[in-house]
Image 1: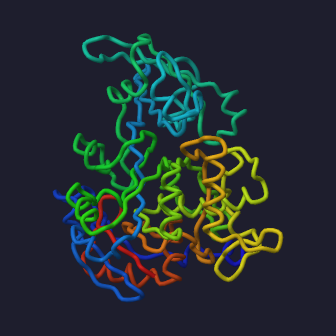
Image 2 (image 1 turned 90 degrees about the vertical axis):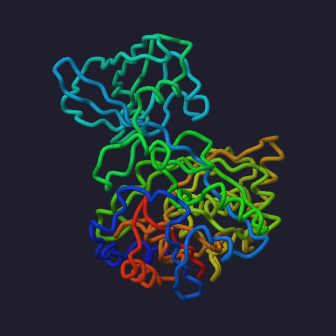
Length: 423
């Protein structure tokens, strides 16, 4: 099975997306976006604020509560050259929460724009916070970058001369929100609000979980009133989400690693709902489906550390499994309930409130979904891993959805319209 999936040709997941169908800005009222409905092969449409009418009472809906950070920093060299530093993931400290609380210095793995103009030396920029002058400096540490396997990312040490100011405050003052590159426009002040979900809480993403952009407080209330149970997890979205598949076959594509946090109460909720969930966005999908494989690992390695629970790109396809994708361990099938219970017991044993791990999972045709039964998602780029994920969810029927959306004036990509997919 793994070879069948690896040999998928990305050209089979292409469609014509005219530039005018890419939503450059969101509509004024986010919950007035169009909602495509795919229900067991039948396609229709509604308006997003009616979402609650299409969901079963008592179902569990899972949201990604990550918050987009102002991850672009610009420095001007004395020569006049503009250098952009794009924060990718924290290096020291590596914990996101601790990172944003740091005072005086910290380090990140970063992408660098106009790198050829920054051969050496320290970059600095002066600014003010609450009337107080500060200087932020950036220094490249290439030897550390090599040691950490940063690849195209560079280790950057940041220092600033006011230890009463946190790095979070610095980003708020001088950082720029990184809107998707395919919007082909500069970030505007309005994006600071419109490119965040109304329930965003945990800072760390460099891209929004865009399926959540359609939700308003009114829609959330309508879900509550309809008996939908809401819960949240955190996956910090990396810039790799925009990384195009350049290889002919997906075997040649390297998935990015993203960091996840799932709290004990979320695992308990999953068990209460027979481990069935409605996922809001592909990031929630990737997290929820990764939980099964983390729980499988605990079946044979109950003493594993959180870092050992990382789900690698092809791992789900490498196990011996039954026709539903459930894994055999020592000749026995590990049910989804057993896997989630393993995770819950692991947290209880170590007196942890949340699971902190990471995933590199690629979900493509050949993958069998374990937890996600319904999916709310936007319309994705041609030849993208997100389109592969949707195709796997719809058992290959993705073209019906996209043909309808293209012929019925739906808006595409991050600021576009939404869909509710029920296989």
